[in-house]
Image (cartoon, rainbow, N blue to C red; front, side, top):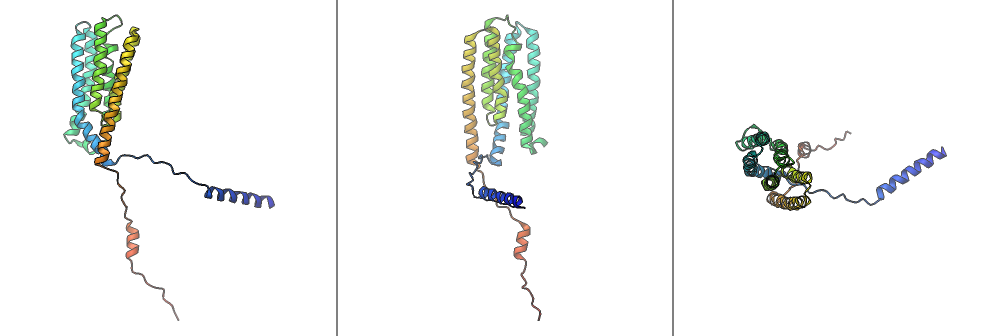
Length: 245
């Protein structure tokens, strides 16, 4: 019995110490409001057409120039790129036209970002798929430069959503480095790394500017929720207790 009482006393003492211990307030992450997120989705749906046009233009130019030397490679790569472009463009048009998916903007954004992942890999793979190892240096350099530059220019138009921009620019930074490593050209790898770092910095700045503008236009607010049950209780007439003789 004495051991049980001592254990109870020690447990109560620990509970009292835990209650009296100073608590550090956990910093809460400041999230954007729903209105700010909806504005970013609207900007993504409007600007993405220009980004898709940049990728299509660079892809057509690469297919024509490299296709003179390697027509089979160019045809296979162009079909893969056009298929991904068609799906992305169709999603963008359906959302702008007010189709059924427009009622679910966050679901559309997730689907569009997934399609951009496929498009980004297909477009950035040009230095690997279009030109073989023994290709002319001018063709290999042209494919790497256009895939890297086109990917980062297009990603600027997707900067309203970070994941969508990353789906285009990350493959655009990796595949030219792989092509330079395959050719054994150290200088080309250094130039590609510097260009990729510069492009990523520009995209981060653009993303911060878009998000900051949306947050300023649509600040996060706190709404007081009404309790119908409490309101009914407060308006209910109060009757005092009846005393009987």
